[in-house]
Image 1 (spheres, helix red, strand yellow):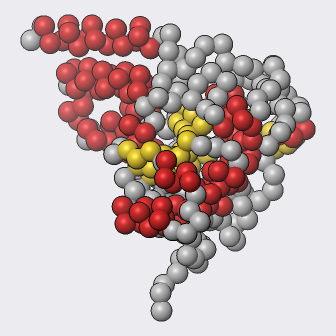
Image 2: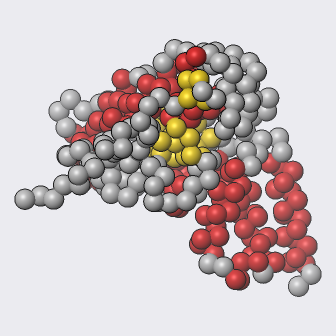
Image 3: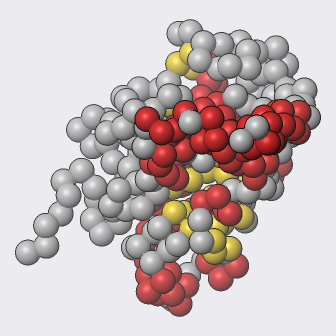
Length: 293
């Protein structure tokens, strides 16, 4: 008899392994639907009504499936993507047999035939100014973890000035630490503790519905465009090189430091206007260290 994970419905195992607490998320005692000022863990404050239609959000958001292996999961995620008007489906290193099977299945979503394939997370999110990862947050240390209702508000805000990507990880392990290092912050869905996990199709559907459903919440609009993921990665590489040349990395494992450094830089939320300045500073530091040797 096949062994089944009691926390994951079979055969559609959880792609993202999202977990949520019971009850609707509330902010300062009020739910997101109340129209009240939104504060607390929202770093942008709350002053101006957010008026984004579902179509506007969908046109600027990419759903990224990372290292998926189950064809049923892939098909269900694609159908959920189309159900709510989203068209940008991306896959990173999918299990090719499962991906071909999902695309050739009877009644498969047209999105699977046009889905873009990438060799790495970095390539898949290069043009996005905000990258959000999905995780339970149970087995790893996380710096910024938002419940879905709160995360959806921040994503809606970000789509006003740039493109956003939401990452869903593999069925077995979720997103790796390396993949998570490309994320600005993480998001989870509240569920009952006795049944915490969801399959991929369900998780994608719930996340996307929350993003397109009509409601208004007071929230301040972004004044400057955020730097793209590719631009932030160039800054990260330059900072990593400067630290290596200075000797800082000799006492710690470089792979671990690179992931931590990548997450740190993304938490800074650098704008596209400020990034060239910081990159220029680091390049000058690198040149000075090299020339002095």
